Length: 258
Image (cartoon, rainbow, N blue to C red):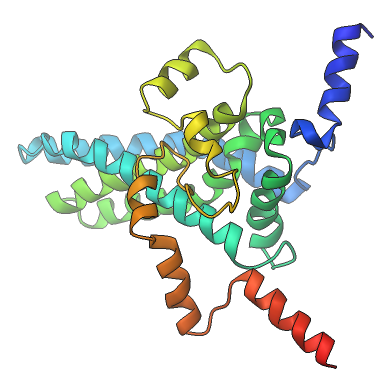
């Protein structure tokens, strides 16, 4: 093994480098879902966009696609932020279904942020494809039973663009943590069309409670200013839904009292 390769291995096993040195792989069933939905997603996306835009063209409303594109980009950013915040704030790694597949990866990412750089394409976007495929399937069904609706066609284009932005989010997120992203990735980052590394680093800076949006980060300044996620937490607490930290503190006090 050459010196450079040895140095790389040692670096990736050093927690201070951001790498855990541990290679985790999905179980057989989850891996099957990741690979199959990664194949099905572009097919459903293409069918939805083709069917919906064809309908808009027939109604002479194709210009609405120009409105749907920024709405899709902003919508994807919002979805990424809400999912990221929820995974950081609620449930635990042992929570059925979402714990191992959603909560654990996000929380481990805070400890070893560069582990994402070692994931292949399916490992990077597979989880989101699993969620996006049923949404696109529903859109296709609605287009089939209501083919004359122009507003449904516009909504389907918007939803399809939100799903593709959301599926691409973890790839953008991965680029933001890479030391040497591709030339194309760097250009997209400089133009702020995708998540920019310095912008995302603010999320990995104490107190780790802002800049949750990771598609392009456009919404982060606004959501931080209006304290969107803190207000959402307060609302959920009011109706009896505790954050993971609040629940841990309460259980700790109960155990100490006993």
